Length: 163
Image (cartoon, rainbow, N blue to C red; front, side, top):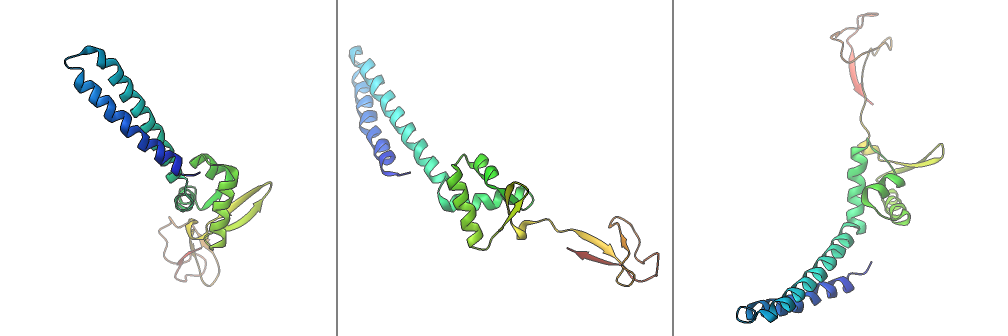
């Protein structure tokens, strides 16, 4: 989206607000100027609010902000993200979401995987790491919560590894 029309719309509100204030100031002695003053202020506020809302939306859906937001969303979702999830979070089009995820893939931040009928982008750096307690000799795997420090099968020292 282009910013210029919304910047112009926001700037157009300034004369309306100024005229409205002038009419309200002059309405102290003459009450016939009160209604036009309020009308000018209402128009000015309306134009300002519409222009600022659109500019804020444009800023929130810029490619840089969307890339950062996609990484944050993937972090919240356990390191995996789909186009639909990105679209739902940022209220953007299918093409915008696809472009953002393709850019992240091209930068090497994620990998695309086909799972059943859906496309999932996996952020390897954000995947949760799994911890295992295992014996280096006999390969016996034990729960990490257990207080054992030696393997019950062979007596070797247990190792804790992340995968």
